[in-house]
Image (cartoon, rainbow, N blue to C red; front, side):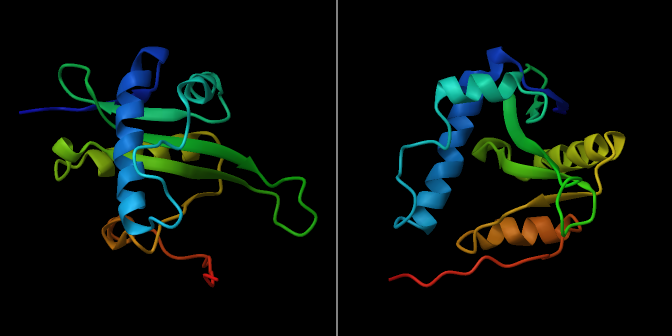
Length: 159
């Protein structure tokens, strides 16, 4: 039986994370080719290296028995304590989450999400948020299954 470990990303994980970033981008490019360019990634390798080193933007990776990265969760610590019209809270925003196509259905995403929740609680965050694309209804269903609910809508009118 394969087990998984969730840990902070390290510089040596960059190639595996980039591979997964391609998978996520391609899902988005198929759903919204007017917005996303197939074959590209959200971050360059240099940008990824800076994010891995940034404590305010933790990346958690799920690894299998062979320490192969099978998923990730990019997070951003959002501090709203100085906002004039908002409650003085901190939010942990999940900027990106992915499970390798070959590891889906093995509860890797759930384990990553639970790890993010534990991290957020341990660091005094009020909530955990993320954005999900309407063109990816499977992701929306997955997040709802985890207990997330809609707190705002992003709207558009294509011209």
